[in-house]
Length: 147
Image (tube, rainbow, N blue to C red; front, top):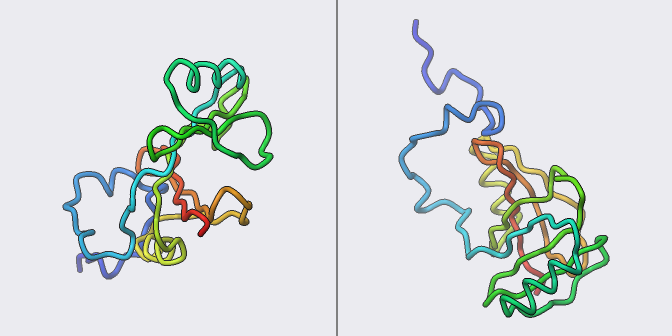
């Protein structure tokens, strides 16, 4: 007897990325619906030099930032660029964040689809966060801003 999709245990996106490529978009009425790009985070070897470029040359506006180590948050016209100082590329460094209106619902929805999602403890000033990987191993953040 051939196994059907109902007979198999769900796999996570992280475990089997090839299984999830080329699938039709069935997400139109799902709970997880992006409300926009919240931020893009990039590593720089010199946070001060990065700030000078992004603020003074590109015209971004510096934003308040929780004490998360060396770095800066900048407004880029309604979305943010997060500069994180590092001589190496930490695992969680380069990523982008999708803004969601209800992080709990988004995490539940993705988990029901077999996506491995990791919530992190709340950090005042950073919003409510969860992290996941796309089928290619790229890090994505879900972010529900503080009210």
